[in-house]
Length: 632
Image (spheres, rainbow, N blue to C red):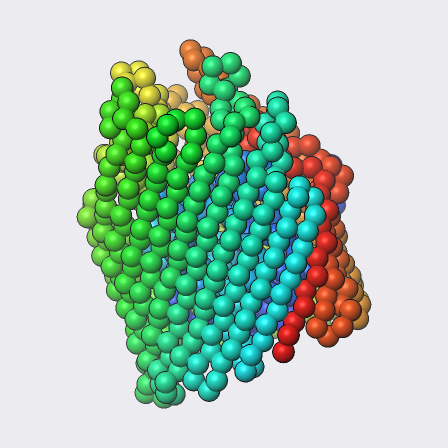
């Protein structure tokens, strides 16, 4: 494996690198207004619809495994919690948007479960690394992942259906219908996944199943040349089986017939009015994120977590030559409910809410060989002190084939409801927690060779986190764990190397390497490596494309990483090391006709046995086959 990593370093590699066509593509995430990617001072990765189809990844977590700077940790079987840590940050410090709607689940620690986001209806994925709080607020401390679903087609009507089946009794069915006329376009889609799952415990044989039914509606209405209205509504019903923890003997997962039932709704509507020949935009948007989670365990009383986030936003953009001025006003309300059985420790039932009023500005200036941006944000939260965040970026275009980019900014992350008010009888909250703050910078270069057939980029970054929330502080007075802001700084630094090479018209090499050093100080002030953050990760993939045939072979290596083990009482927390692992996947598609495509994928080809979370075994080798048909 050292040879593999060394070869990656020598080649300077990346999975989804910015290629020739990406130079003129537009990002809607790295700025509050559309921006050409090569003018952005932050690291940006774009995954297109074509690349998603080539990878044929089942869910968003699988799609992100090859992305530099991303560390994926999934608790075993399909559908189980999949966390993504960006550049060493915590899983709840990256903001996920779905068609512009904030999708982090406030009922689940403000995280997003990347295993439950199916890829079949994704049109485009935009990833912006580094602190983006000045643009997007709390949760965007380490970056933003923007999921853009397939828009309505321009044709009068289109329908496509797809069916896939394979290992673990898995069946995936998808369908979408698009229709429109001069002023209206609408698309409705449905995804259905059902699987018997796999056993995740080291002992036992019980399989943990998973099902996911998602409906997605998107549309546009343009009553005139100056006004446009976009709307989207996404509803998911998810059932995930999971195991218990053997707190008395091993401290590890043990077979159990536990189930989580989740209902998620994301919806939004945006109206944009443009006038003064397009020099002035007025944008108003409303959005809601609604999550309802029910845990059915051995307890006679179900545990219920509900979270609702409502957001109103007004934005104005003024374009003056090569300058862009943007102002944003936001108002956000979060409501959280927790229901469960009373115990010796007290009554866990509670209704909580917070509200935040925000104002942000952004200024961009194009000086031909130099692109500059400045942004700042003020958040007035009902429960915390007012806080500021900011960001500055620059891109220097040395020539037509090489540029240097830099950015620096301050990110913020508000404490979650769980951290502040507790989690039933197992975790004691701390209402006095303060927001986490991060000062981060990055610098790097992008270079193309051989008429843009070869593209190389490298980035070095560093982040200093203050007030990091430690959620595993034992309180001897209560006998429970609680959360505290640490007094010492946490440091995260690393490098990302990216490379793509079109060897011929039909063969493309895509590779990536990431190095990460993420530490926090313990009670004695000694730096300790943070958990579930591998120092080294790398990927290599090759695309083979011929008329009607596409083959993708990818290899992803995740190096050794550390995790926490909580043995049975009275022993205390222990630090353990998880072995590194390498996954090899193969996907292929064959176009039978203009309307029909056959597909196949092999996951974990060499049946690697590995754990991304201590005690949770991951599925072995699996094989799937499918068909897709388009009606016009």
